[in-house]
Length: 273
Ligand SMILES: C[S@@+](CC[C@H](N)C(=O)[O-])C[C@H]1O[C@@H](n2cnc3c(N)ncnc32)[C@H](O)[C@@H]1O
Image 1 (cartoon, rainbow, N blue to C red):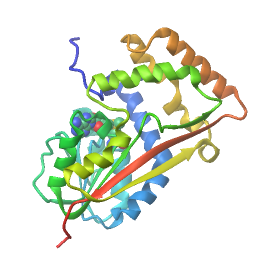
Image 2 (image 1 turned 135 degrees about the vertical axis):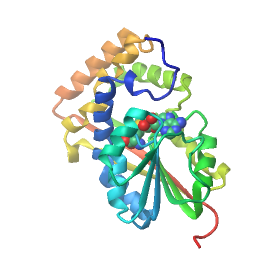
Image 3 (image 1 turned 90 degrees about the vertical axis):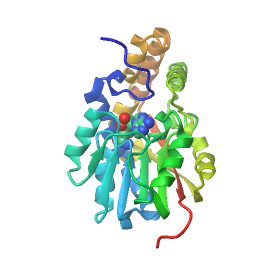
Image 4 (image 1 turned 45 degrees about the horizontal axis):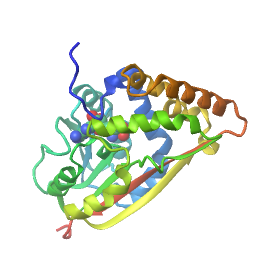
């Protein structure tokens, strides 16, 4: 098979391929949803009339968004055809369309709430994506982006010190493919430069004392790095060290994990008329 063009997000190149990635997306949303729902409610999601989810993936997050905004017309934009089909099946109420964050296939000022959930880190031109979100928002509308930052990802006890090298290689590879694993710290100024007002940055965290250690396995298992080992991005020795430290972590009766995310939001200037 010919090599596909390098993209920051490619479900086929994830551990377990498309099915494994769909499962990982489901777990990622399920574990943090109660925290994220609280933040999104504070930003006005339940009263949304026209909701846009950029980068809907398989619809794991979109499904919760649609439930949280029961009266909204729901639209999702997703470039990957297979993920888009899964999202459409999962959220029949939503209209799923192809397209990218940098060139949204939507008219000006047509929606009042825009969400993107772990998407900006994969977008090659996040400045352009923020401008596009502003363009499609009505005056007074809200953009809320959930993201990570590679240096604020969380706590594991005992520490995964041996896994650090493998993760750094993975982040570098994501950057070479046009993504940015440290997008979290940049979003506020990107949104401000695009013209958003009333900016906010809110942290959320979810942890194993509440949710159980097993629930985190699909997110933490170093097997997630295997495709990167196969393609030579992560060195075998660093992968082996990551496996060793993960096994030590799992066997420790005091094991604990806390993962953190952030929601950066802004409002389109003007008031809803
Ligand atoms: C980590 S997944 C998150 C999916 C979904 N938001 C969720 O949380 O379940 C990233 C998603 O962003 C999409 N994506 C990547 N680059 C994009 C772009 N330039 N514009 C819009 N979506 C993009 C991918 O196809 C993928 O569905």
